[in-house]
Length: 97
Ligand code: FES
Image (tube, rainbow, N blue to C red; front, side, top):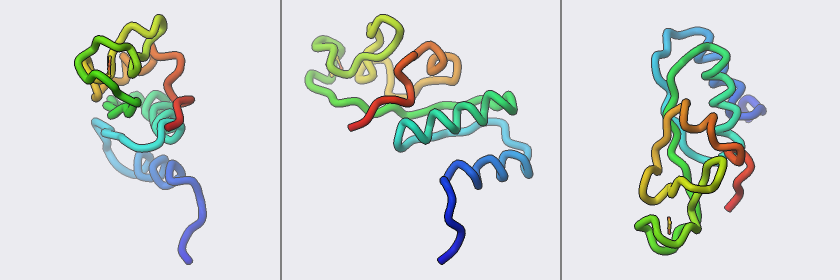
């Protein structure tokens, strides 16, 4: 029943039909990657909540790190990251639990 599509397809339509200032996203990272692409296409600000496997939860063990040099601990500096920060994470969109 209903429409069969990727969840990002209606998001693109909603963005097109409304005046959106900010997108807040969470969920599968591959989906958030597409939402980031849509936000970039329309120059809309975005914040995303990242999930990583965490051990220490205080920025010591490195198990949740992201960034070009894996130097940003999601547990300590996140889990919410801005559009500008996300574009600095080459692995954003490829992480799977
Ligand atoms: S859980 Fe250890 S650094 Fe984030």
